[in-house]
Amino acid sequence: MTGVLLEEGGLPPVREVALPLSEPANGSAHARAFVRGALARWQVDDTTMNEVGHVASELVAHAFRAGAGSVDLQLSLDESFVFVQVCSRSRATEAPDEPGTDPAASPELFIVGRLAVDWWTRDGADGPVLWAKVQRSVPGDGA
Amino acid sequence: MATVDFSVVADVADGIGVVTASGEIDVATAEPLRQALISVEQEGATQVVVDLTEVEFLDSTGLGVLVGSLRRLRDVGGDMYVAMTHPHLLKVMRVTNLDRVFRIVDTADRARDEARAAAEA
Image (cartoon, rainbow over all chains, first blue to last red):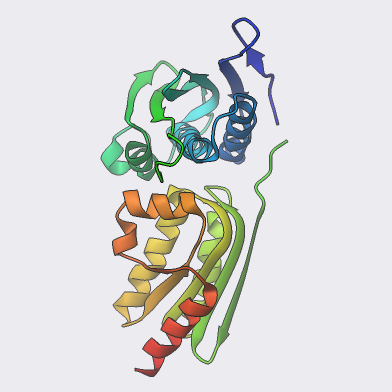
């Protein structure tokens, strides 16, 4: 896993972590691995882990496709939800193929909209800032 | 460092195309899947089985690859039969309504049977 794991808050438990990502080619895979590691430590169930990993993967892919050169992936947790935020930290040197954050034109954001209970995106100075909230599954709900 | 675990094999037998993938399909690995699908289409297969029973992750890019191939196949009177079992993949198909678009079954053998029946019809 690339980057430095930043942990905030007291111990135990840690409920907020962040990971800088700077490799567009493997950014989504890094994001999923990061989510799996963090949510496993937080003892989050597999169903939620899969959904949060998918949302993070799509958000990171979208940010890089929209022109980010590097991004910060942030995860936080409360009793009911997992929050995912992807902040673009620099512009890519080459122009993106499909800039913008129109969900209608973005397959990544379409999927995020289907898996998250809430989400938004806004333009930042260095590319999009993307945020999503994923419901933690209740054991036995068949999600 | 996280790398994407992915492999794909393509074959055509008795006019049925079979593409078997394993691992994770995302923006970094969707292109080999697309090339595998194109290769069986170019060999003349119009009924194509896509075995995703060993696939653990499928993102929007991979879904786009499958949809593109399905459109090409249906344009020539063919179809695609997708075998998948991972609960999250099935959920993604359901929430995107793609479960109403693809013929999804739970084993590669069943997908082959359906493809064979369609080819013989």
